[in-house]
Image (cartoon, rainbow, N blue to C red; front, top):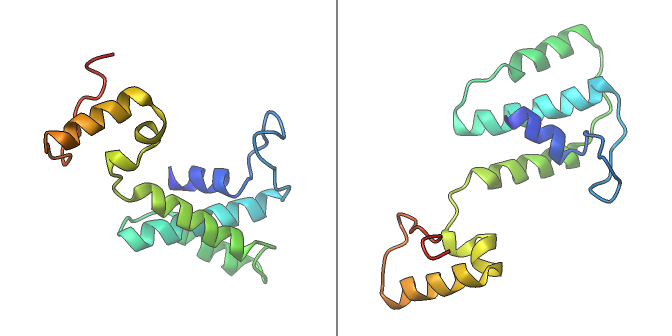
Length: 126
């Protein structure tokens, strides 16, 4: 999953329309090396064993140079994926900021001093 998210955040995927996101035109080796590097960084930092390390070391054993990759893109994508892995507070979510029903229910919860450690069912009254 991390590897596929890396392709998304590095803009390797071809969009249906350019309005969605800009496509970074790279060759397959560059795309794979970036995605595998991100997968290795994210998984290594949280203690998940993944096959990216063997791909990267195999690539470097068989090639004299690292492909033309973007370190900036790798670091930004790694940061974005790690941000997705962090626990999110319900009050900080998009629904809590944009949806009036959810906002109202959160105000009631706060007024009644109810803990949000286990999320309430916000959709009971819908």
